[in-house]
Image (cartoon, rainbow, N blue to C red; front, top):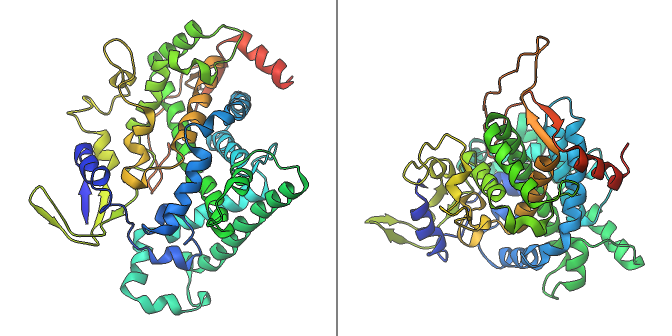
Length: 431
C-alpha cells in the first residue's frame, strides 16, 4: 500500500500516469452484498468506460445548463426548510440533495424525504458503510471459502448481506422501469434516465443504464449533504466570511431578486467559499483507493502491479506550504491578488484524480453553488441562544468514516433580506 500526502505527487502519478493508476482494489464484500454494479469500485475496463460514457453524456458541463431551473427551485425550498428547522441539519440538507438528485436522475418531483425509494436507498447506504469497511472485507480476502457460504451462516453486520442484495434489486429496477413506462406513454420528465434511454448507444444495455442511474443517486447524496453541513458550520464559526459573501451577492444582485447561475462569474468570493469548504473538511478525507495495473517506478521507489494507492486528501488539505494556517477557514486562499479565482472548481482534489475523477462533479458544483447562494442571499446563520440569551458555542467536531460530516450543532437562522424572502414566498406560493 502507498499513501500519497502531496497533491503534486498525486497529479504526477494518478493524472499523468493514469493508464497505470486507474484500477481499484478488490473488496470481496462489494460483490457478496450485491453492490458489484457500483461505478466507484468497478475495476478499470470496458464496463467502467460504459458507465463513465453515459455519465458524461448527461452530466457533462454543457448538459448541466439545462438543469439550472431545477437547481434553483430546490435551493429555494431549502431556504424555507432551514428557516423552519428545529433539530439536526441532516434532514433539510439531505432532503435538498436527495430530492434534487432524484429529480435529475429519474425525473421525480415533489417526492419528499419519506419517498420509499429514498428510504430504501438510505438503508442501503447504511448497510454498505458497514459491509465495505476494510476490516469486514479483510475476512473474506483472508478466507475466500467464506464467500460460498449461505447468508444465514453469518451474524451481525454480515447478516445484512441478504437484505443488501434485495435492496439493490429493488432500487436498480423499480424507479428505472417507472421512467421507462413514462417514456412509452409520453409523460416522462427530463432526467438522466430519460436522456440516456433516448440517446444511449446500442452497446449500452439496460443493466448498465440501471447501474449508472442508481449510482448517480448513491454516489452524490452523502458527499453533497456533508459539504452543505460543513458550509453551514463554517458560516457560524466565521461570521466575517459569511458577511463578505453576502455583501458580494448584494452588490451584484438586486435586493428583490435571487442570485442565479448567470451571476456566478461576478461572484468569485462565493466560489472561493465553496472551494474552501471542500479544502477545510474534504468529505472523503482518505479518498477512494486506486490500484496499479502494471509495475512502475517513481522517485527511486519500485511500485509493483496490484499496489493499493491512496490519496490522503486530509493531508493535502493540511499542507502548510500550500495552505498556511491550514486549520483556519480562509476563502482568500483561492483568489488572486486582484480577487479572481485561481483554479476551476472541478479541479479540486476533493473530486479525485485521473481517470477515476468524479463524473458528477459539474452537477455537484452547480447544486452546491446554487444552494449556498440562495441561503446567503436570504438568511443569516448564527449561534443559537440559551434561555439566558447567551450564545451556544459551536465546536467543529466531525464524524469518522469513509464520508464525514459535522457532529450535530446548535444554530439559528434569521431573515437577512426581507425583500428576497418576500419575493421567494410569492414565487413559491408559501404563506
